Length: 360
Ligand SMILES: C[S@@+](CC[C@H](N)C(=O)[O-])C[C@H]1O[C@@H](n2cnc3c(N)ncnc32)[C@H](O)[C@@H]1O
Image 1 (cartoon, rainbow, N blue to C red):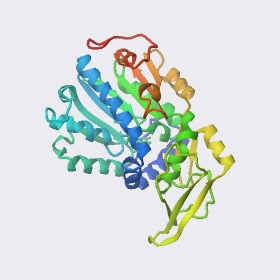
Image 2: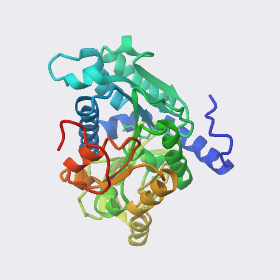
Image 3: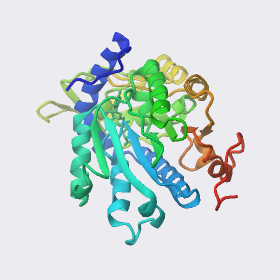
Image 4: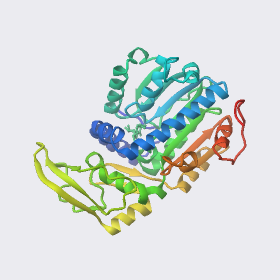
């Protein structure tokens, strides 16, 4: 399949899209296993996002009386499809939220990795949600930069989660995503971008990437790089926690046939390369994987450039969830000003906007 970027896409962006698509095709199963269902800090971050989206949807449906359509850009292995598909299928049963069962119309999503989407489909089928696939649960293989206009009713809520912004082909891709979200939601819809912030690299990112190096490759700031090639697999002996400041990590090294080549191999932080990662927020490894943790100000500049003339909110994750949101920032495009009441409830007072009936 050819992934189309918009006609005006620069060749550089197209090259990055091709490269990144291969990266995600290659790492899909281990990403699912070691990161989404593995690393405790990633799980905490995903829990923060899940709860935020729950509150947002319940607020829109129950308090604002809207019917909602959820669209997940870079939906990967279908985290939201599974979570909210259960609400659609089993609404009214124990542990479902009646408001969601009543007002959530559909969950759609787009991703350029067919292997990620296969994982999603398999999970949905295993959860008994196959009858909804293709109707109220949709998965599309395609580009995040070519989102269709989603109309006004049901209210489109378009989300990009789990630092997908930071893996979306560098700053050019990030700008394109902001513009695509604006086109998708039109004048009245809602878009939400949840991503890590550069300010959290030192305290949070270093440990995370070190202990998931068998998925995304050995971070460049760790030395030596003797086994940092595709001929070997380096498996950390334990999950290094995000806030662990220790300067190294121990890994077991396996060759391609799975034979242990070296146990307890020690990788240590190089001071200059570590400082560079902290300063730039550019996470690079010895594979083609790249992630960017953009600063709060950087997001402000994309919001101003691509969402001008619209009501917007930009909130540090800690203000929304002090326990789990610390490394995050969330940008909201709030076409009809519906979210001000919800954010005010969370102590975010800037900006005007409407208040829905059960809030305040
Ligand atoms: C960090 S994962 C997040 C997956 C999912 N949103 C979650 O929260 O679990 C990023 C996803 O973005 C997808 N992706 C990256 N660049 C893309 C692009 N230009 N178009 C479509 N999907 C893209 C990758 O394939 C991957 O599944």
